[in-house]
Length: 140
Figure 1 (cartoon, rainbow, N blue to C red):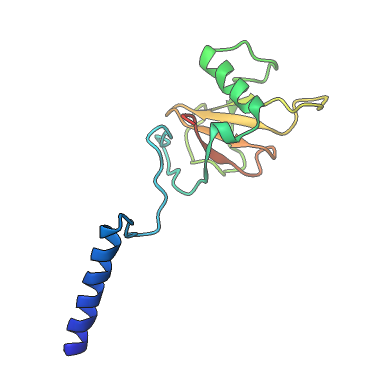
Figure 2 (spheres, rainbow, N blue to C red):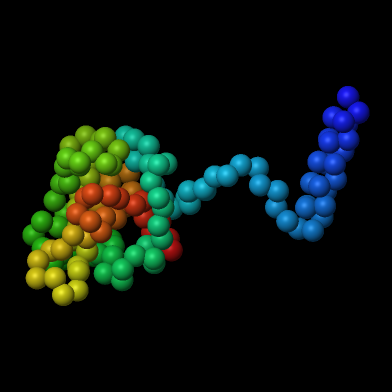
């Protein structure tokens, strides 16, 4: 019983010292998803890596701006329904997702980069033609 009291006292002292020095005491290891990252209305996006729009290639910001303006888009496929055949995005009804080309400098075709939007306001980025996706924080 004395050892428990000693350990409890030492823990309290350590917390007091950490907070007194202005250091945060981690409660749990977790990643906060910014409020500007939308949650899919029909599925869970918590398992996706969140990336800042500003960390993506500059052409991704160009595509985002085009989406916000409603076009015009460089390819006729842009804005069409994305089927999610790979099943990597949350399982939503057909028509929920739409795809947009992110230009690849030097490519003579559409390349492999896309932004996929969801009706809930979420944005996903793939650089490998739908093999993987990141959830995009469009505020940064």
